[in-house]
Image (cartoon, rainbow, N blue to C red):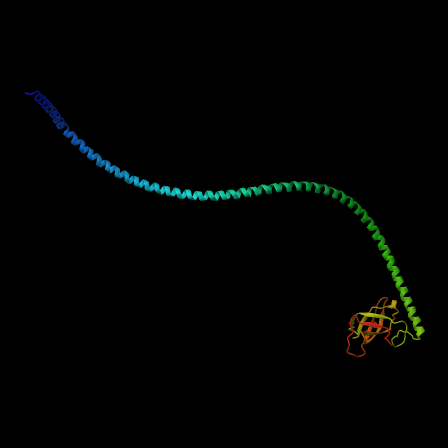
Length: 285
């Protein structure tokens, strides 16, 4: 037999032994492999189920997280808006703070000025107090002297009134004497029936008041001339307004500076008023 053939036979024998070993190993491991395969299949199914459950959970978690992210984004946007608003408020507050600081400084300056002013006013008040005290003392002395002078003035006033009464009586006596003298010179008597017509210088005056005497139903008028103007009782005056003659007035009660008389309009429908003129002689008479 050839050597190569022998080698091949030996090699074939070895391979047969190896194959036998493999067949034995395969036969031994077939059940275990089948069991491992079944386990692997079950594991795969379980893994697939777990993966599906995890995928569902992932999707749920992802959706929840996406919602959370969207909410966070919305919150972030709102907070950004809030931050912008707060920054604006902060700028406004800073400006207000600066204004408040300036106002506070101004108030401090005013307080300082007012403090100085109050000190000055306190000094002025002290000076005024001293001056007022002095003035009160002077006023008290003045009032005392004024009271003494008032008493003296009252005494002098009483004496003056007495002298005026005496003077008035003398004036009336003088006026009466003048009237008697004029009557003697004119050849008339005060006891005559008719009114006295003045023959001396013209006496002019005004009517100051007019009223109706309820007892005699006569018109009574007060004129602005009296015995100092040579007016006497029963003297006749002419009442005129402009160039119009209104009537006569006969004096019934003369006084030093005024007189009262009865107005006679001579039956004409005229009205004598305050301010009308009276004269003792008409022009051309």
